[in-house]
Image (tube, rainbow, N blue to C red; front, side, top):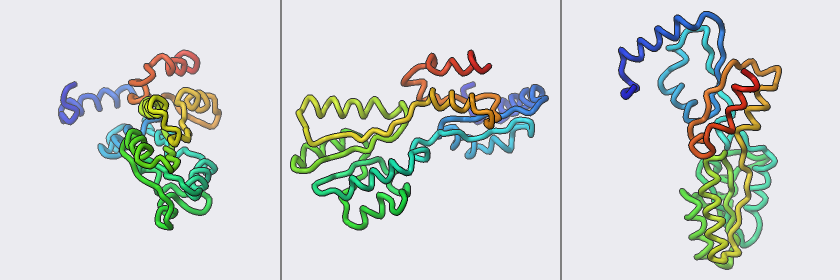
Length: 209
């Protein structure tokens, strides 16, 4: 299938799905990109009523604990501190405020597009502690690891990462074992598999059918 928007081909696939969907079947996607694609292309409206699509923990920002957000906010109020983060963390609320509110109050919080931007800030501000807020699944860890290695090689003692990363396999295991989670199958995250491969996720099919 080369053209994902080929109408006749999509219609044929839908007809095959309708023929197979004789019983209720719930599929959970665990990737934010899938969540967006499902909504953008109105897949819930296209699929037969027997197939239910539900969203799982695909957004690492959304599943970051409130206590962790409060930790970020505390760091941002400390003297001689530069907090660096991707833009999606800025508006996430903690118990009382968000990073965006603290930034408006004068805290030195900067949006970066790469961890290497944070490294550059550490080079240019040796008198400041530059902290990168490490939020994400397996997909973001390689570039963050590169920044740590770079800081070590350059002896940048003023650069650090506050890691709040999540692992996908334990999350899937918890969902599969939760009696209240009525899910028949998972739509696995392609981005994560590109980093860790498929083997760490194969236990879902082997152990839970």
